[in-house]
Image (cartoon, rainbow, N blue to C red; front, side, top):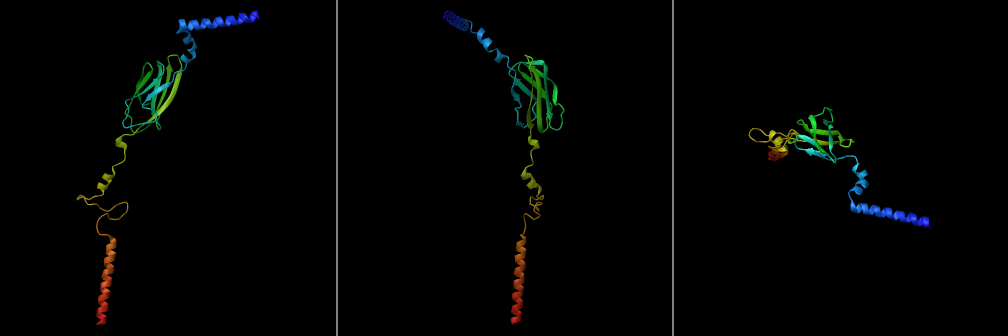
Length: 197
């Protein structure tokens, strides 16, 4: 019984000492407890242009933001198209703390992939990619109203519709058929009247 009491007493004293340490110097104990969290690997938290974005104009740069500082000596960024693997980044990327920025050429309409490989301050290598699309107004389809104007003569009158092969203005062919039948009926009536006489 004495041995058991001694062990319980020792455990209680150790717990009391730990609690006192937390109260007196709270910064030291949490730092030890949270050490695994502080050692977590760095990750990408934001990218501009955003992954999957469609832009009206070509961006001047791409920016990658991480949750930790990035080593200036080990940061590479590439912007490529699906057909051509040429890197469209101008110069070397710049690093300011957690953000890596890379300037790009004037990008024509199309889909682009941003690939990156960086090393955080703790030596961890981070790689990944995102995509965006450039679709300017100049690449949009023509105005239907303009197509209608192309089918008009200089006087502004519409001419034959190329898609249907029929004139869009003028006399309807059905009227010619009706007029022909009327002429035949009148002519037949005249002939019968003359025979009757």
